[in-house]
Length: 381
Image 1 (cartoon, rainbow, N blue to C red):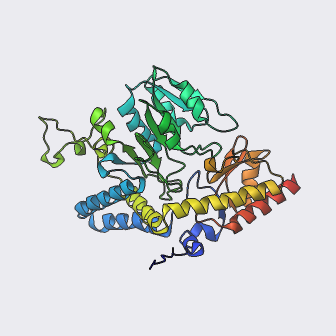
Image 2: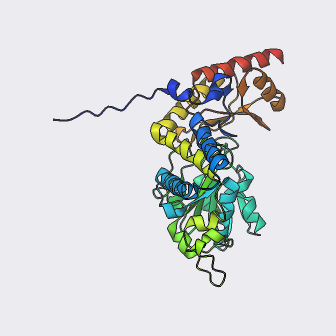
Image 3: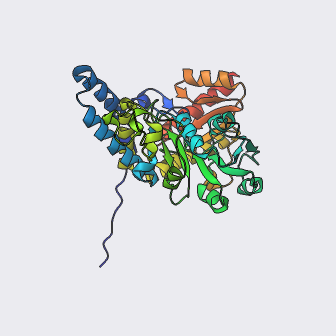
């Protein structure tokens, strides 16, 4: 006899209520900075409340909670805890990655990239070869064609900030050979599934303030265990050694985990705890459900835009490369963003127009509010 296991129906309206921003505006801007939930706010404030009343008497408890959150991040991307370092943003994570790979060779990247994917390599005098997109997409065959004896790193975003193009890291893994695969997950962590082992990612960095909805000052970096043991860090802090509280000044015994390279001093507990609360919500909903919801809303968005005569600049021919952010051509983008804001719709200004992001806390009403506001702007102009 077979037992039917039913999947619980997610009450998206109830989840939406956990984000107070939804009470006043259509917030379609998570690709820039996502709003925090009440739980994430409470996690950060709870730390400050204890620090205000008790000082650092909870230090050991806070350190233990940090390790719990590290384990959550490891499970979130299918890594090991010692491969995870807690950062404050994508830039700090990318620089740790460059530390580990600066001797690997030249870098293959893309013109579409947010500069944090390229500038840290250039700062080390490492040549970067940016590929030109074709119809808004980074093509696997172009990455393969750029590989030479001089190149040793492929550094690309999982989702491009510029037009929302989403690449499959597994396809990059199939052609990377001896190249190290570095992924900037700033625009995917928290909304798309990431499995660093299955995707054969060597290093990855992400921020908590976008799709993870944890606020500024949070993030993480992943360095594969193989990479950790092949390289050493250029930076080190007092907590980076095997027995930091021994206070030894006459010997150096550095740890080999990712945290030793990243967490160089006393932790930014507020950001870490907010990130932990954000991960709890992701676990509660399920990242697969979040991905499905965000993409479903994005399909609704692009259909409504095209029906209304707006030109969508994001590549949409292949559903597998669609993300949850959409670039829309708009004349006078700065003025359009301002006028949308006055009508209670929050989006991002881009040189070509506006960028609209759909996350799981959004709903169809947010999209209709955007469409109505765009219609008003069109009539006025």
